[in-house]
Image (cartoon, rainbow, N blue to C red; front, top):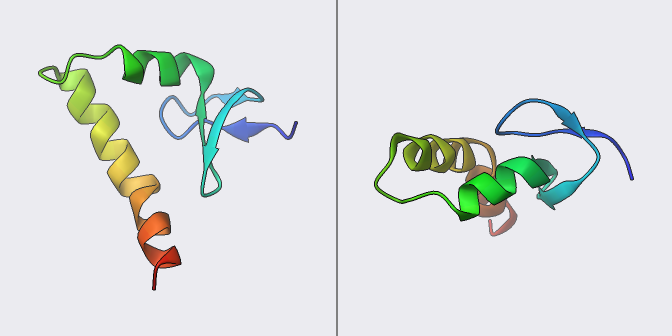
Length: 62
């Protein structure tokens, strides 16, 4: 698999999920899944996804 950079931690990883060309590594994916919605971490992850992935998804619907 091609080596990508995780949009959350910015590390080069070859494992994880890719959404519209943006990778979230396995480590960050697990942290997001188990994160409590009332924490700063949750808001951080949400902001990264909103800034990096959501615009590409919205663009594909235009």
